[in-house]
Length: 89
Figure 1: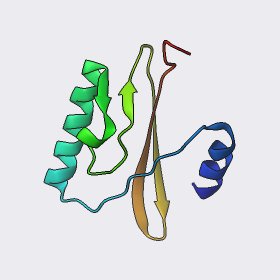
Figure 2: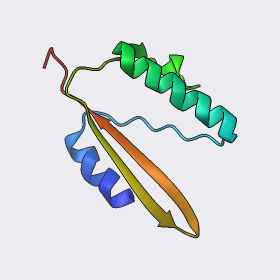
Figure 3: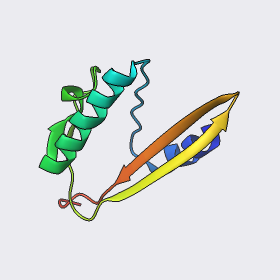
């Protein structure tokens, strides 16, 4: 995954990372909040994630969703990617 992130870094204007240990209940709430924000189409990242990143997001259609399931160092993980093209682009 590190190699993928480094390759993306070259083509992305910026990458913001968020990592937090949460209970299953807290994670469920975070994903639900993200789901509702995506449905609305506009939100501030820090309204969903406890972060100082105040990036405003405006999601347009179509939306591409990618889920990667991985095993690393005896741990299992999901990596989620949601992608869209802004209308002012």
